[in-house]
Image (cartoon, rainbow, N blue to C red; front, top):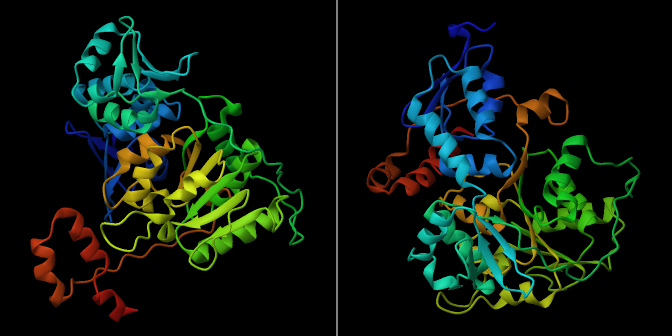
Length: 415
């Protein structure tokens, strides 16, 4: 049985968690916290996590209960968990799923809750009122179907994220399967965690699946997970990537490991704009416009194909304009891929509402122990901020400070 000194975590009343890195239970505690808390900072001896509404809702969406979260904390905490933290965990987790968004038989979009007082509260909330079309009883609210994405964003801000069960358009059918042997000659198949990722996203084709984010470490094969999703959904697919290099890598992998041919895969970039059943585009091309005030001329790509699935690679880098376009794409299945849910611009809530909640994640240390990814050897090198950047850093806003420190030119001089 672990003694008090063996337990590495201290949970504080402000919902922050201090995690000592030197003890034998550190790795297990870190893996546990990663499922429901946000990492704030990780200096040498003590890492800091924070329980946030969004981290708890992501855990709830992935199937965790409030009791499982509390049990995880109690397993590693040195001291008794503050009562207010226990109360906030249970209250926050209970808020997820109290509202269901579904499509009525007549095609209208319905927001439903068993809590009639919550329905009354929503009917009188200024954030939701622009989208309300009426309420036939004390449990349902008819809302504008074309505002599905904005409705979910509003509900998240109100503090009651809806479980979206309104379903998806099928898109044009596509016959595609994974190869048992890649064209490169190697045997190919999904690893256990990759198969679990696909299953968590697809959910057997039910309305409970079809939108969300898979979080896997770098090198764990997120592209392979996407291929598994394409093979499961079997529909025309739009893949959005960070740059042309990534685009070419995606295309090579698709041709090597699926039954798709070169005629099935199109490239939508600065060099070529070919739309095919599976089309790969870059964020840069999508967000191109001639002037700051002109339209995004390539946003028409979202409507030009009968897409049944849209895949967002490195979703933590998704440009803000693409979020706005995604708000109107809620009837398409959406899969986000990333190694981290943290965004530099702080728009994690938009990822949750518009792409979907976290569906699956696995800590990198678990995959490292299983031999799926290379062992990471980390060395911390502390570097003074360059003289020319110090004044800029001192007067910068919090988000800008992170960027200035990250691009410190002194780092280059040590390479």
